[in-house]
Amino acid sequence: MSDDVLRELFDVIESRRETLPEGSYTASLFTHEKGENAVLEKLGEETTELVLAAKDDDREEIAHESADIVYHLLVLLSMKGMELDDLLAELESRR
Ligand SMILES: N=c1c2ncn([C@@H]3O[C@H](COP(=O)(O)OP(=O)(O)OP(=O)(O)O)[C@@H](O)[C@H]3O)c2ncn1[C@@H]1O[C@H](COP(=O)(O)O)[C@@H](O)[C@H]1O
Image (tube, rainbow, N blue to C red; front, side, top):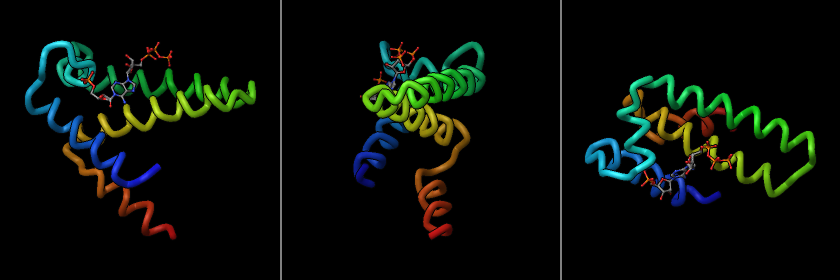
């Protein structure tokens, strides 16, 4: 996955947070009545789905669920007022 894809996705998420357009799934997470629990629950569900996909050795489903997790993870970072670079710097520091 290229850095650009992550940056572009994070920028879209930040834009949705600022403008809250109608019909946006991302915007619905920022305005959800459950607050941040909505995205936390999603992360839990997607992680369970990833585990099941891995157990099934279903590579297509593993990629699909992994992408769902990365997307919801970036929404969580944005919700917490964090930057994509907070995640990238942490990964860099482990090299
Ligand atoms: N990357 C994503 C993305 N990944 C997952 N999702 C949504 O997350 C939800 C996942 O929840 P569910 O698992 O319940 O949905 P599902 O379709 O049953 O999923 P599976 O069971 O197949 O895993 C679905 O509604 C997906 O549409 C995403 N929604 C948006 N994005 C990105 O965000 C951008 C902006 O989207 P909007 O905010 O909708 O304009 C899009 O262009 C995409 O780039």
